[in-house]
Image (tube, rainbow, N blue to C red):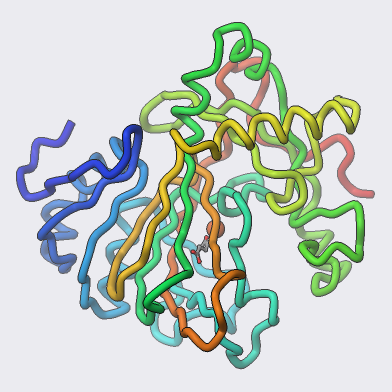
Length: 308
Ligand SMILES: O=C(O)CCC(=O)C(=O)O
Ligand SMILES: [Fe+2]
């Protein structure tokens, strides 16, 4: 419900994603229409703004519409003037691990391995190749809503174990064992979140699950591994099936903002030839501990298995 005729959103898929047309992001627009932009974002989950030739400072201010912008914990990744901004790049950049060139590859919700995961994430396309480097989105709220009632009731009772890019196999190319040390592992203990979360603004229920290794998910709490893997695979296949997904093809100067509390997303930079430069500015906002659908299932907490 948006009582503001300046913010006009055109829906791009059946269940989510809208383009906000003819709205240049300026400090005045942010001050005057920030609330309406936020409500439009709640309605559509992903908002696309085209042709935004804006300074880094304006993009940083835009981020404040969607919560409290977070400074990246890795200081050298921060924008020199705007500490809440970082760069995404598929190029070799000084001081970065090679893995960062394809970060975000595979379905995930940002920082789900933290007790307080990200709320919104937004990107501003600075250099965009003619083809490739699309970002994929999946609607975990609509996917949950379409499940049979009995299945929903069962899923509401479960919790999921998460750990920062966990892998049972240290040779696994997706795992971060290669470049996180003992200290970083201590700082990212295993935690659990409810599998079905309630969106803090809309009150609607969403599945909060990601693929096993890519999404930092260890498994379903208290469930035998094969059963847990089968359930995760089934849910991911459902959420990421065609009716619930959108592929964003970037144009230079696009701004895209999405709600991690009810979506999954994935980069596709791994398939992009490095000769085609892709650079974007990125900002995330601080979220809330994950609220369960059923209060008795409990909020996010340290896992009983933590501290190994
Ligand atoms: O590069 C992309 O398309 C998305 C990267 C990503 O996952 C993120 O910025 O959180
Ligand atoms: Fe991401």
